[in-house]
Length: 485
Image (cartoon, rainbow, N blue to C red; front, side, top):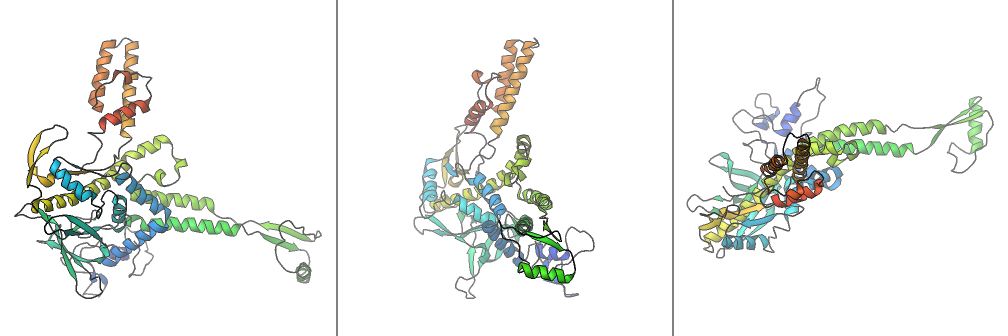
């Protein structure tokens, strides 16, 4: 992003990043201090710090992300698309492989003070825009009932580490809400080595770190914030020029001297444009020519297409999903769908893991309050096998299916298979019996669902077949689960 405290300069040649950008992003090891040699701002000696972005860059990214979502339709489309795919549609659901654990988990999940099912969209949207999530955990001393309260990430002064390991955040230092200098510390939830149960005063997540040595997370839109601003600037300029071009101007030539020109203007009463619908009468000594201003709309449209390509690439979405769908056909959109689904699926997986960890904390607190035993019998939903596991490991959280188009792809492959087998039977390369066996084998091995002869005919509609495949696969495939380790 453009720096706040370092002046911009035009580099003599194209480089990957200017010194000002290096300072603003914290990319250099031990940055945003002051160099003791030549007093340059933005550097520290090696070994004195990591590659964390400066606090002003992090806060600027948060501020601009929230402003962009509220004012920039492209930013709104990016965030709402991720939110809709990750937690929208069928929503996020809680599951447990033990009835006792299921009851405790549902009490926490549906507690009106928590309402986890109802806040999924706004909670994920907040994390995407701010880059971090901090929940203060409030645990009943006798009941073990857990409730939580979100805390603004900007209130975090520092994240303390356990044994200096950046993968083990131990506590957060918070600015006082009353404006005093009495900073507050909240221990972060983790598994107690003695009891095997999760305990702590808060939960902190920063899923979009740049490096595993970072302590803080950046907003999801960080890399495209400037490009969103560029897109908005080009579009706004084009609109302004278009509006100005609607004002008609005339180039009037009066044959004669300057005196003749002044007399003409005086007789007309000024240089105003004739009113709409009126008639301007003049002789052949006066020539009126309308002046047409060029809006540059074509050039701006092309420029914005290039900017939008960068925005879509940085956001991990197909360009046609954000704008300009008329420039892509169905085949192109399907080709681009797989990378997009994987990117969205990664965001969803991180979010579901956070939700599962939050529920496991509530289950562990119920165990500590003796409402649940430490170990329970868990039943595998697929194999129906039972085994003894810690109560918290029975919890899983599932979200909407991301790869909904997989059923369509599988259906088309199966129809192509049946068409090919039919032609092999026609040329007598295969017997009908062998073709039927091959169709059944291909169906069951490729899709993993029972063979249905009535849906294997070449004239079956792909949508009907896709519906059957999707409905049969849904209980076992295509669901992202956050299961305990």
